[in-house]
Length: 331
Image 1 (spheres, rainbow, N blue to C red):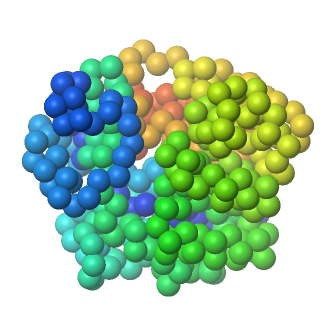
Image 2 (image 1 turned 90 degrees about the vertical axis):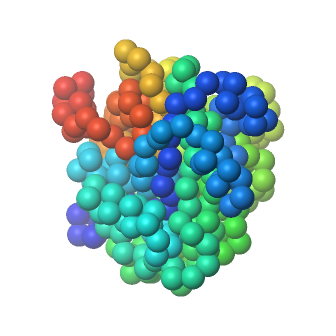
């Protein structure tokens, strides 16, 4: 990427504060919440579930925000566009992302919904069940977009979770148009199967004509092409114009680009504590390595290192020195 640009990576996504607590599977069963799911909830259920959860930790999150925090930890120059409210959780999010070295200047909303929060229940198997109240995130619009920031970035990174509400979707389409005109690469994450199921047509169009780099896990890419066969999905992705990165949990990742397929093994983790943010940190690590000029298989290896670090503790933000981990394993 050009060093003359202000940002290596500029992300647009949900500005959310994660509230994480450890509970038993019975806690979920009593409330009819599917184990390991990611679902959207309304304000009333958010209040009820928060009241029922045990002592927890409040940690700034949001998928794309986590990715650029990870990329910043690896030395990339990053920025983030997302909406919070002028409330306590909005202040928490703003402080945390700026403290991580990410440029965040989106003005907080002074009216409307409160700052979004994700109530994350972690069960003893390390799986996370995510209950998200989007709040102010859904009100991000084109007025929050600084076109000059997009044009001054090497990569524009967009979050699939934000595609559902009409106003943020329009803002992201506007950002894509600015990026295309400015020669900024566009990266996109499929985010979740429910996002794919709701916007399959849009996502396929993005991959075919508007996106240079896409991230998805095995289930997401199979859902994209409505197949149970990963090989069929990979063949379809190979025909798309963009570079595709498929994450496979402990199996590592597959990168499909220019007719070549690169399989990269995962990193060994002594104990999986909380899988929240694994895909986010993988994407952040991959993009940070890409802007640093590493070849694609090494980009995936850096992503695996970052993902392995974040699942070894609670929360979706890195706690160890990612640069040191990468240097020790890859040089």
